[in-house]
Image (cartoon, rainbow, N blue to C red):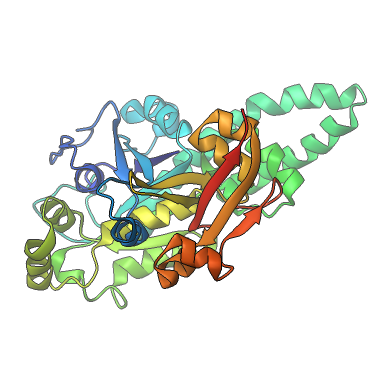
Length: 364
């Protein structure tokens, strides 16, 4: 699963990406510093793995991960090719969700492409370009569906109705993700691969001085207002500070957090929120050799979850032993958990839940 980091030039996208991945992506005070997207895998913080490793006395911990893609800054006219916009839009089309970085701090030493800080305007600039690109996609698709509808295809006629409704919605300046549809009609929109149908997290990039004032901050409030209308998530963080602290651990990290007045780092919150935004959960496997989190989408059944580990597990799936994380932790031992009736045998129709510790039985 990929999450694209987007925004205007010079809002802190590459700084945030560096903090997330420690990849050392180039970051500079001029537009289009990033041309080709930087890509990095980021581990999803999960304290359950550490607790299970202590329980099983294992040293190998393998967390779940998510892929972040640092996409170059978009500008007005991107949908018409301004600032290499067409190329950058194609990069956005390849991701599953969007991490939209919004500048929410003033700093005369850092250039803003619009000359001033205005989060609401900046978000609108990006959204307008994505909407214009989506309208262009629909302009190409609708005539084909119209032709099918004229031939008497009832499914095509219904699809045409939805696409016309979507076109009107987009033309009014609204992203596709805010159009209320039933599940079947959502599939029609999904097949269009529209940029504005992708789920979004807005990341308010704030200054160090704003860290403990976000509840009343004017710029952050602007972002929250936009996000509430889209039912989008909002995370506030100082990308510069997060980058500086990303290489620290343990007591040294805690010492610097206290110095900066940071109760909780923004990066873990962003990573967890991104994981959730993509509709992902983790089931766990635990033993002396390894404790590991496996990524699946919500609603995945046991055989398909087994297939994430190995395709043979899914093909020959028989049953799965399942115990809840907290039940195992309370029992302090898998066999004791079994004696307490906390370990259940589940079949092919079992829908896996986040934090399930699973042992698959299969026959090849």
